[in-house]
Amino acid sequence: MVSCTIDLEARGKQFGLLRLARVTNTGGWSNLDVPIGCVASAQSPTALVLGGVHGDEPEGQVAALNLLRGVRPEDVPGRLIVVPCLSIEAAKDFTRLWPSGANLNRSFPGSPTGSLDEQLADYVSRFLIPLADVVVDIHSGGRTGMCLPWSEMHWVEDPQQRRLMVDGMLAWNADWCVVYIDIAGSGLLVGEAERQGRIVVSTELGGGGHVAASTHRLASSGLANVLRHFGVLAGEVEPPASLATILMATELDDYLLAPESGLWETLVDLGELVESGQPIGRIHNLERPERPAEIVSAMGAGVVCSLRATPLTEQGDNIVVIGREVDRAELL
Image (cartoon, rainbow, N blue to C red; front, side, top):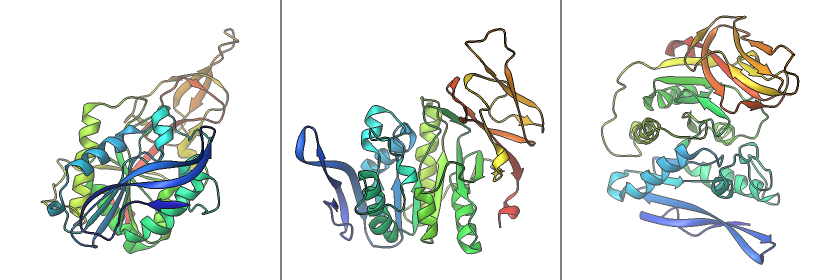
């Protein structure tokens, strides 16, 4: 049900489409077209770069587009496959989810006979990830979350895979790096790539519905440096200007969820060091002004990694992420 209009084994520079057959109210025979590009001088090493897994995260989409347009075959000793925006219909609406309500980043490994998101996930899982030595999946906090601009990774059990992922994460040259866990279900793209033994580098580059120029610069420079680090892009690897602060957010208590619905008021800033039990925010009930605000307190000490960007909050929404500082040796 998914086809690719370019030959990913060919040399040179190509632009094409991933075409998903579908039926719509405006067409009995129709396609959902997802742009893809490939630049290659050889088949190895190969990097798969993905943006727009969530439609309201433009940072990776812009970085991937700039990379794909600017790179030449002579700049790529191996092969570079770029999908600038996987969730293209969601991106056009600037929404996290597809119009169907699907979250592509909970659809992996997908199914060739499932819904459109499952079919696309299946194609990526079976035909794109296996080609890659390195998978780069660029995210941000989207409209609802504000994150420190960080590069990130899951904790993986294989020590060699984990070491290579730590080095890739640090090669982004962000001031912050985060090791995280999944708290909203399985089916992530990076999880499937890790299961297949790939080196995976990901990010959360800001968010909150807007992108600063400094964030665009970090997205582009970090992506290029990671690709140089793994030998996919020609050029010298740039050393970091300063040592990154590495944070571990690997306990459920690190991810604080709203105990009730209301208007969220943060009492802390991104990057702030907090203590266990410290009040970090309040939730106000708009319909009961006489009622005291609900206090939300930190469950443990650490650095504020992420804050909810949208004040109107529903019970169960993630409002704060706190990580504890570690050094590189602890990850190895």
